Amino acid sequence: PGAGKTACVFAAVREMQMKNKSRGFNFVYLNGMEMRHPFEAYVQLWERISGTSQCKPEAAAAKLEAYFTDDDPDVKSEVTIVLLDEIDYLVTKNQSVLYNFFDWPTRTFKRKLVLLGISNTLNLPEHLHQRVQSRIGLRRCIFKAYNADQIHSIIKSKVELASPDFPVFQKDALIFASKKTSSQSGDLRKAFRICRLAAEYVMDGHADLGFKPPTVGIKDVLKVSRESFHSAQSNAVTMCTAFEALLLVVLALLYRSTGREQGGFDTEEIVLKMDGIANAFGDEMYLPSPSLSETLDLLTHLGESHLVSLRSQRTTSVSCRASLAGSGGPWPLAALLVEDIAIFHALKGTCHGRLAQKYLGRM
Image (cartoon, rainbow, N blue to C red; front, side):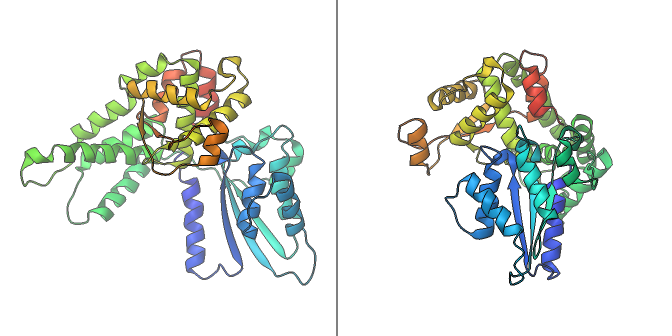
């Protein structure tokens, strides 16, 4: 994670659009982690192509089959590029979803389909059925984790772009943040997070500096990095119950897949994802997965332990809320107050180690 896979594809698409090469070109982004079930991929793709909604997975799959394999010579020629992110979460028992998605490009006529799949598991194709492997082929691009020099070069250019006239960060501070991130995971997003937290820490104390412009030094980065990777919160994680551990793993997965650092996640997202992971993992200690009311209690307790933050939101989904809980009022948004890597390391030595390894171990 954080090696630039998704960003690289988006950059390539933007470049093609700027060069006016997007005539008859449709780009669709799908993320397996954000779906309640792998079959939802059919629905989302058909909705993006057709502009319609309220379609069941079976019907969407049939419509996509007919759409891409239509050999009518009068059909308008067009190209659809689909970026299938987090394809690990689209693997079903018979792997029919991945098979169909990778099979359609081989059977198109005038409606061409280009499929790009992104996975954080390097050997995922080797774990798939032979028929799926034959459709995926051997064309693979491996993104290695960033090393310290690469991370330093990227964050240095970003900082200079944001503040060209004043060096916000001291040179040693950026080098330290780069080396710290490289030694932990190589996830570029974590380097940006450390730098942002260090800048916020310095700005909070800027009132004591008078009119002197604030500068982020190595001691500031060291302080926030220690709090991120080796805080007392890790001890609280190791003491979590089964459902609390499940909830933290889900939040870490949602954060990792979306990169979202502001706003948090709706309780509905959390409840549905907990149910999906608990059933997929199959361990009885996590089954049945927590209900909405139980999840709210868990979030409250984790909030008291300073592992998550809760805040209210203005909008809500009455139909979904009624179906799950039968109650009114907006659902709170939950956000992690501890790094996903810290959750992984804290849980891997506990009875929840297998859960953490399966869903957070692909660093």
